[in-house]
Length: 254
Image 1 (cartoon, rainbow, N blue to C red):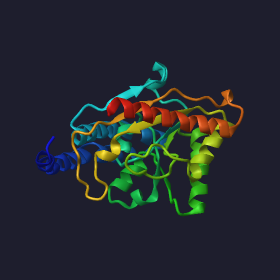
Image 2 (cartoon, rainbow, N blue to C red):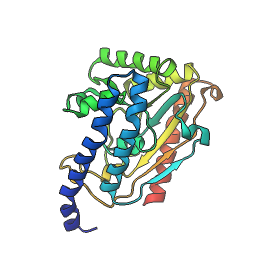
Image 3 (cartoon, helix red, strand yellow):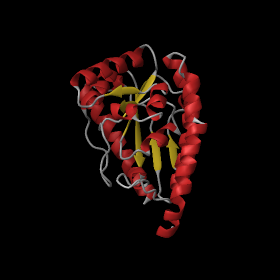
């Protein structure tokens, strides 16, 4: 696609994105607000999935590569466990949500964005102030409680922030490492997720949409803690699976 064509598509893409948001996520979030956490996730989830699917289509203008390696029964309903993924772009969020309606851990800055912050809360996202040790500890406790008693699944980005273009998955950060240790201690399955190409879709500085980029995601089968000798071995294998999936996607899409 030529640069002229991409420029011409910018206003239409953003107009569709905004209109779709007000027709899907906003009403879904408002409907779900009066209910309990688990019900909010169940009600707002389909609205987020619809919006995410449309956003991916208008931002890439091509079919997104999706490979879900989980058993059929686990595809139909997200089971109890932790879903971990690499993080390169804002586009990672709709890419995951288009496949899995699982609440993420979200930085507090999103909460202050008008309307979007409300919708993030309604989706069941956990909010964390990455600069506050108290907030990190509180979020960790809430995440642990959700995994065992409330919401049965949670998605996290162990890197804690977005990585630069071309970088593969990097190391863990703050509460994400603690959550993986917790999953090991409580024998909770961890599902590795790898994403590739999302960083190229939107320029983070200008907001320019680079239509026509190849984007892909691989959702792998769960790793079971009881098959490993230590939490360090378990965490290393979890993150290695994310790395391997990233490399697979890089080969398929380049």
